[in-house]
Amino acid sequence: MNKTYMAKNGEVPQKWYLVDATDKAVGRLASDIAMILMGKHRPEYTPHVDTGEYVIVTNADKVVFSGKKLDQKRYTWWTGYPGLRAETARTRFARKPELILTEAVRRMLPKNKLAQKMLGKLKVYKSGEQHPHQAQQPEVIELAKK
Image 1 (cartoon, one colour):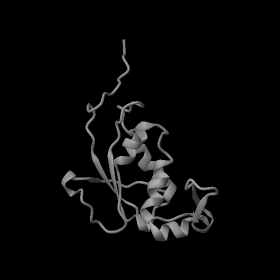
Image 2 (tube, rainbow, N blue to C red; image 1 turned 60 degrees about the horizontal axis):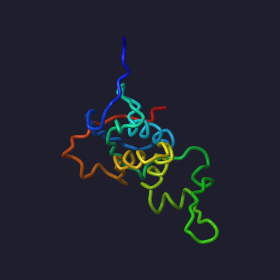
Image 3 (cartoon, helix red, strand yellow; image 1 turned 90 degrees about the horizontal axis):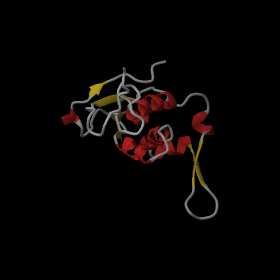
Image 4 (tube, one colour; image 1 turned 180 degrees about the vertical axis):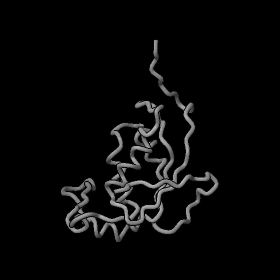
């Protein structure tokens, strides 16, 4: 009789991946990153255990939006006072480009306590190949292929 395998905490080894975001669509890249953070690319995937990998994203300031999303997409948030604060994707991209990719990935993760651990394994950097994670020997992968 076959038994279903359920991973346990610390049982599945976690690798580090390096992703170059140059000329990649935000949504396609974010969905691929979310799958890796959740661990759904592995046969050992278990929903209630963090089986995902670490992901380092460089060149976050070189991602692209398709269509007119750069001007039409609006990010809104609540400050605690009446009314909402809002800004377009263009102004947020100029202010903090790494926040655009981080928020896109966060919204694709499950809405539970485990998602905070998964999001903590995402490291996003603006430009260049400089990141402080060389000691982890990240493996370069190509995501968001058309």
